[in-house]
Length: 286
Image (cartoon, rainbow, N blue to C red; front, side, top):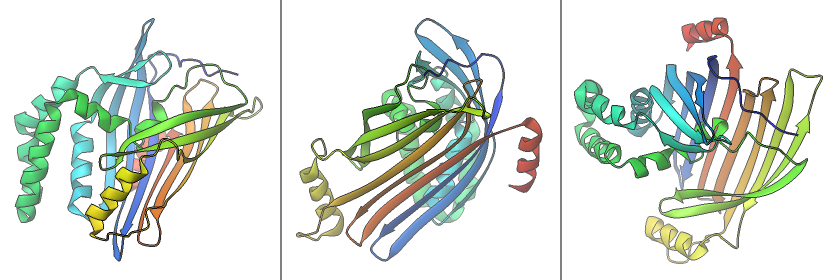
């Protein structure tokens, strides 16, 4: 079984919903983001694929200033040329320099008007963003976490076994601490269905690779509790459906991490490929 590289030159539209909920003690922070994006394969070489990405519309409902900032950063990155290896694994942003130019040539000043009541917060986030845009290697790391980018950019274009086991390391998922996972995949073919290829993933924490001591130190620094229970529970489930043309048709991703009864983070992403007509209809109600 295999997923081939899609044909180049034809735009695809996707409707993405992302939700996150973070609970620390009695404090809860959450957001729901909806967006419509366009993706197309621009070019293929012997070693790389070049994808055009465009953000068409988005809405963000969040409980903190950082959520509004995240939406602004999505807008900053609304036009990208993304580079992967020949299997679809993310590697680079071809037009990275354009982001800094856009940021300095009016974008930062334009969004600052939204944060007049949060000037200190804006100044701090703007300073960090300026640093990030001058450090390409660091910026690229933001594309390989547990975000919607994961849906599109994995090593998709290859031959599959019916069942597979592999490792996934979510770098700096807990501040400076990585979260290594052991992923079990089941691959199904449905030749009679519109979605001809389905990948189902489940994951558990790779306890041998997880730096539990560093994680415990982070928790102690964060809570000022010396004898805190640092046992980490992880639940991850994913389902990807590919159409016959090798583009994602729809997908669902869910990841939850929790420590005892006082700390948890849950992230969920849903995506569906839509027609241009459906795109227009969705934009009118978002």
